Length: 578
Image (cartoon, rainbow, N blue to C red; front, side):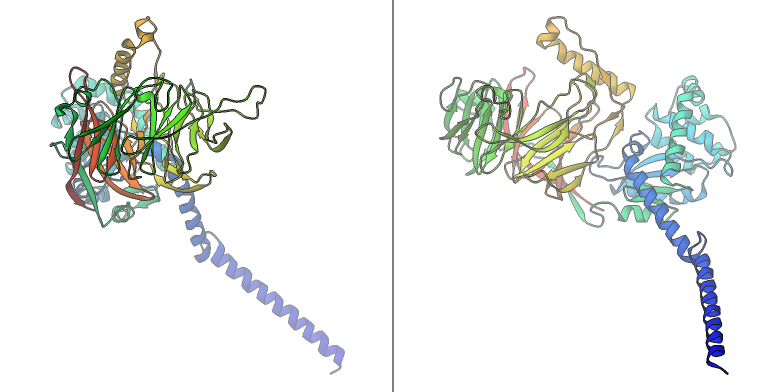
């Protein structure tokens, strides 16, 4: 055979082999990569799970903003899981007891959303409407467990009789609710949310990490919660005070006119601010070590007074900012005047240098003495334009650290606000319209985030009415109210999760759950960095001023509106196993 013939044969064989290899690869690609193939189905599943997690993150505030809740013994500490349910679903009934045990053990709080599968469960739709209506009567938990443990309702259609069996004595009103378009709209919202996050059946459990379907989803949801498998302390406050100004022998301490601030100092001392006068007290002996401050423009004196004086911890000393004199005054723990510094106004004609005016809100002091301000925090409307958190040097120059949303107008009930403090030379920003608290370095770089505590509740008519009445009472006592001015208020749809943050003298971050009129106590989460340390509850009418170790300093107000400074000890009430 000639060389040319052999070459042609080899070429044909190579082309045939290439064709066969391409066919094999194409077949493998079709088998493996098509949506029903091994790899293709795996990729589709992974992509669907990613889309579901993204949707859950975006919609989480809405998902948990309803009153259909199963609450355990500790309503602020427990993490939240969303359960989508069909009351005719056999698997939902099988897992109901395990859900109840987890709730009662304080491991989780469950928000129930409805996803009736009407093609196979013809009564599930009406059962969901009945459960929604039970919320208006404060009977959701009774309704929920009744629907899961008793199936008489699947054979009978008398929902008003069923409502009476769970303690709702308003048959006409309950029937009206069942037929109300708003009830149907709420159910439609539940179904829409389920579809948006990828729920396809019941029961489905939803955490911030995504959707977990089936009976086994509960165990996975519990395992994903923060602190799963470890003890989390729960603290209260001892009723016996360590110090109470009301019993002090010196009238300067026992008769406080306006307790604006208070702080723990090194060496077992506390400092109290009565209007413009500082009181330094030894906690161990109760002795009044000295007084300082007072009204005036001299060194160590103040033009502002009470809460209008902002003060901060600075290396064991007390730094006090007087916005009226634009001056920072530093006192030692023994009450000695350490230093005073005044921020200059912007030089005339030099617009590039703009000092922080008296309407800037002080945020804190860095360890080198530089101050941090927020631009005027109130937006004056429902909108929230971005404002700057600014570092000011002592020549009046301002440097923007980070931009944050302004507070909503005071005319908005349950308004959204941004709280900012300085802790360990880091800028802590808590915007209560978001799901996280962000911590930035001095240059504005975000270092880490922690989950926003508390929960978002829907603003019911009753909550809006109570909040409006409280604002009206406050307005009547104000200068504008006495002049006949009447502000118009509008409520938000959802209650923010928190309403205050502070940094204590130990550098711990305290975050208060939003206080509502129906709450019996105020709850504070306490943490450091990314670690949540404990939750403490105290009476609603106490004003927390500072904390150190297991001690808290609070302002208490009696029935005659007289202030007193009280130091109390926190104590562990219970340790719940999760």
